[in-house]
Image (cartoon, each protein chain N blue to C red):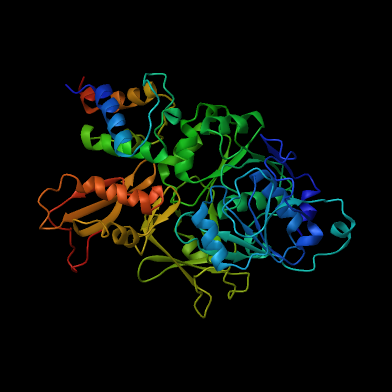
Length: 88
Length: 443
């Protein structure tokens, strides 16, 4: 079973590397996304990339999207909308 | 004249003490209002001073070029080639070393007798540049009339405190500035180099209750912790298609705010606003029109507008041409969906990335400069965060044996020759380009 959190972290690192972005040293649940080193475009690319690897985009699935402040909130949103969760 | 508004209740709050000019040379020339009378000046300074000086220079300077805060050397060079500038005015708070023209410190003195007693002798031309500070900047000339045609004037209801997250040297930001001036409002201006969360904190601390941003910028604002502490009465969106989701998110986060999205064809100087918190606009407006604007859909499916109360020949300094009967084709595709008319993108296939325009053919031309690229098609990939992202499909040259480094070469080359938002976010190697029934590349 895919660990959503792992996929997200791997994606963040890969996108930062591909787009010459410098990430802040440690990425944990409290890391503020806007200060993580991932700029606006980088964040948009991340969400598009995750749609490719996870198969869904929660920001399209929500009628009134909430936008995450921290990495923890971001992961929680993906876990919530992950199709596997829906089956549980 | 703008100066009349500045002496009213209009005020500007910033996080820096802009009275203290930093980094000015001792022998740098200082100029006052009298010395720039009738001259073609460029303003390159901190946003707070730009806003104050705009009010001072109106009616005095012949023309004023507003220089974006992040303008680079290429920008200064190109602009000096295109325009006949007499002087560049600064406050010492931004790097002005790129200019070859003389850079002088401006000392606006609003108490000078001349400034108060003499009526506006001239209609100052306001020169603004279009987005993209690298490459050739397009300079558009406006007058105060053309810029404030749709701006509400005078105090309407209680005074709002407008936050400014845009660069006031650019069209969108300048509109917010003029709007605030004419409504005698307070303007809160965080310095452009602050980090984003700090900017939003600054807006909260200073009681910002009105804010204008693109839909993509609003999504970013909603990611900031401090955004949850903003008590907004006015939420304005523009510059990109406002989709129903962002309107819903904003209505939810700011339940007591009026949510307005603006469609504006800046070149044509015509636009309208939608206040019902729904995407697009009502189908009935095709019959009744909106305030001061008539609308219809062209045979190609684009929205055409016509100002009903104004001289239809006025072009606003841009490139759009009104037809003989005054109708302007905005080039924006629309689609009727039930009782709404929805925006669908540009007819010419231009991509809007968070408010920034990307022309696919321009990016394709750059990618073709990379050895090993045989064919390329650049198109929009829908993004729930940025509206759209740039995707490039590349057919490698047949003789290229090893294609493993091609994607990286393409990205690196694009980074060197294009502004960041034009660099393709996704580059894929394909065997052939997708072609539609007409034989044209399917975007």
